[in-house]
Length: 280
Ligand SMILES: Cc1cc2nc3c(=O)[nH]c(=O)nc-3n(C[C@H](O)[C@H](O)[C@H](O)COP(=O)(O)OP(=O)(O)OC[C@H]3O[C@@H](n4cnc5c(N)ncnc54)[C@H](O)[C@@H]3O)c2cc1C
Image 1 (cartoon, rainbow, N blue to C red):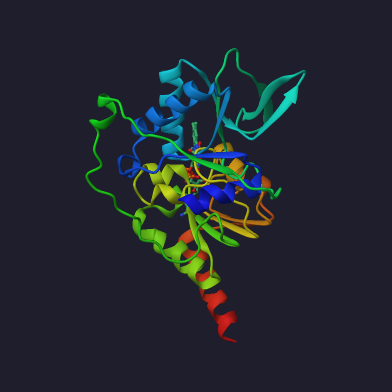
Image 2 (cartoon, rainbow, N blue to C red):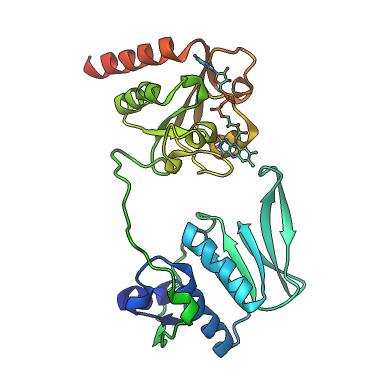
């Protein structure tokens, strides 16, 4: 913890506050809100920025309520305009950027993950421990269990190849088709919201507006219609290949290669071909 705090100096932090306390060990929001609210009040902090995660979104919302502060979320940039801080936020399914501001302080903001690259500026940070004193109501929730998802192969954020499945697969059992192809190609499996909502595949694999934004070298969409909310999460892929039985499916409008056919026929053949090519 202390090593991490000191390391913040290399990236421009002049001061790092550390709240190292067992009461903050569980990933629960309210104890964190207590500590942050106290820091903001004690040091007259005017701006608090969060990198988005499920926990950070919860903490930011709790802090906004506690401090009666304005929270802008899903920002991808922050600039000074006429002496004021202005946030940039994608809107209308990521087709436009809008400017957003705050009418009061403290200003709170949640940033879309991956919006900034870390930039080393050198220097060292002063590290200060902060006392942790929790409100009674913040200690009433308890974490009873924590489980980690088992996964193998590359995650969809890191994968150079993604084979994604949609409702056209017909059922959860047919995800083996995309899994086999992904395995043969050394890639990861992605999914549409329709199938994760239906419980066919884990939420962590959802690509799109409310899922992950990915940009692999190759994206193979199997039985996916190509709704705008899916498109915004994968349109940055190098080569997009679509397999869909409907020649008018929207996915073909932004695919580099399209196969009009049944996923149950095409995908296993593709897997076979890839395996044969690898073996030869
Ligand atoms: C606010 C909001 C946010 C959303 N966020 C997301 C998001 O993050 N990600 C996301 O994916 N969606 C998102 N959606 C949902 C999105 O609008 C679509 O409903 C969803 O992407 C459709 O998933 P799908 O392509 O699997 O299913 P469908 O639209 O039902 O498409 C299935 C496709 O499979 C084809 N097909 C059927 N049978 C076969 C077969 N045997 N062989 C080949 N092809 C076949 C069909 O022709 C069809 O094109 C969001 C929606 C809203 C309103």
